[in-house]
Length: 261
Image (cartoon, rainbow, N blue to C red; front, top):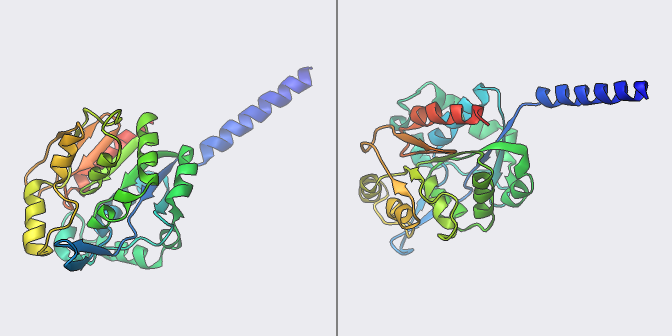
């Protein structure tokens, strides 16, 4: 009996040590859409994930020792919005641009993400979820049946959730009744920034827009900072940020949230 007890205690200790040796994991969900219809389909524009919004968050997370997995709707390689390669979006950390481009072009894990269905099945493996912005997500993630399931699971379990720029719009894909984010204060691309993007960058209107209004109608409180300036806000287990210039502000709030899990 004594030997059996010693064996069981040794086995439990070995398991605990092994578990602690494994890095905690964060799931990054990204768009794989490359085309954004504008003006009721009369015009099209290349779209995807904003590279700096993804890479600033990814770099910060792995630098803290977390492991990262990637997921897209059908397990296809994420598409990068070519607009996000402009130098102006990299002012926070210009030295990271070449590194980010190299990662996008050569990383095997980034090129072979799991599907959202698989991510839902494996959701218990992750302590946090990050969804970078870029208007690609308004075309594919916004309409994917698995995305609300994944968001709700992380919300209900109070796991760390980070939504960047356009990504907070995904909260509105959850039913208004019993939405786990109801009452949260959230940021996202501001109405003025949407107007500027549509008028001077894309020169056309997408079908899915007015994110701040959508969030408010869903029962959330919306806040934003100055247009074109970094801004992020944390409410409970959710960190949301406003625009491509908010990388540092997002990381300052999201990394402590991750460490609390």
